[in-house]
Length: 305
Image 1: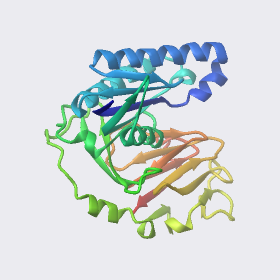
Image 2 (image 1 turned 120 degrees about the vertical axis):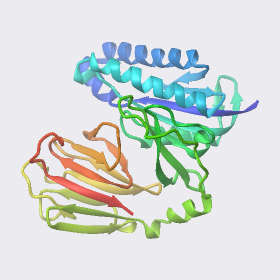
Image 3 (image 1 turned 180 degrees about the vertical axis):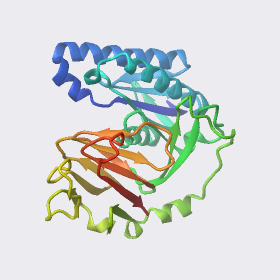
Image 4 (image 1 turned 60 degrees about the horizontal axis):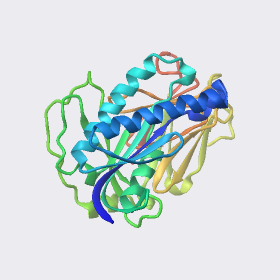
């Protein structure tokens, strides 16, 4: 049976580390409890939970507005929940949304929107919500909720790139005004995603370098034989790797002490990566080996063009 729906995928970021910290039995109980809570919250918000996926949930909503409202409320309640937990057991949620035709078969569902939502969930950072343009069509921003365009992102298995937005959900950072989501020309967006024209610029102190998509992968680190050197003792010999994957620039942390990402104009928290990865888009900064709270941290500016 086919239905028109907005698909929501959630994933608990950092669940592997929780198994290391708590052991298999307690970690399984903790993750199962959180996913069950997420599923219940979706059902109370007029969503249909299709299945739970270990540390994730797949749900369907009748329209984009109800899905956006549900995931924003989930992020806010989960964030408050994490504040009460020890750091080694706090798992932020990543969420992907996509709208379209969905085919219901037994206890599962299939379709392009399902694949897109799952991929956006994989690509976004901790505590982020990424949504395709279709899921935000005729959905208004609300107090404390804004839609920030990330541009076209290629989704594995799709011929055309997907126009993606990040839903900013922090209550204390209200939108300047309420706005109706507008349509973008898909041909223009598709043209902008041409890999031959994509590049990333890196700068640290007076050291500036630009890399085309076909130059990737490249490495950032402390030693001279890496592609972009940051000479600071807190930076690992090989600290991070930049890859070109599925039409996006991906930062992969391979360091000892981690990498922090801050996107220009973003209202969400800084993203911490420890042996994890995140898509880079637009402009921002990378703090290597320490957080942005340290004024002496080596900070690399980046710009994806």
